[in-house]
Length: 127
Image (cartoon, rainbow, N blue to C red; front, side, top):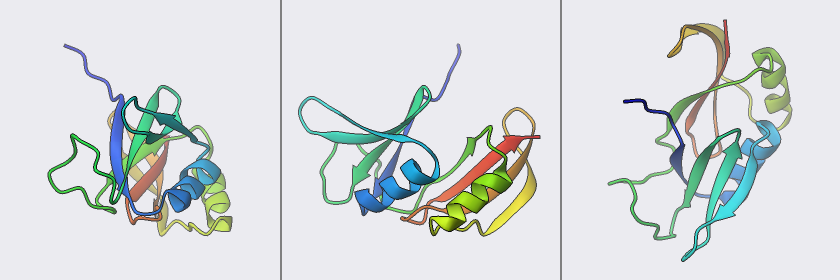
């Protein structure tokens, strides 16, 4: 059996602030999908982050969906130092890094920051 990540879900409070961070800061694209109820996602490559906005009753959902409970790592081909400088200019300064970490396939050089909801976002270059 083979598994791969298709998408993950974040619960967010402010769609506009989330867009600023992920679109302007990380280059993701906001897309709308869904047949019965409009839903939003941040597309990047062949993956996406689905967004559940607080107050919208989307099902199924996590048992206790709360903003700021996410913690994930994204790989980038942009040097993390350059990425950190751009994100700081947008008002999202990294609070840790660059630091050495270990990812799923080996060593990483990572920076850490929080998105507008407080989710921990690790951005990393394979070392």
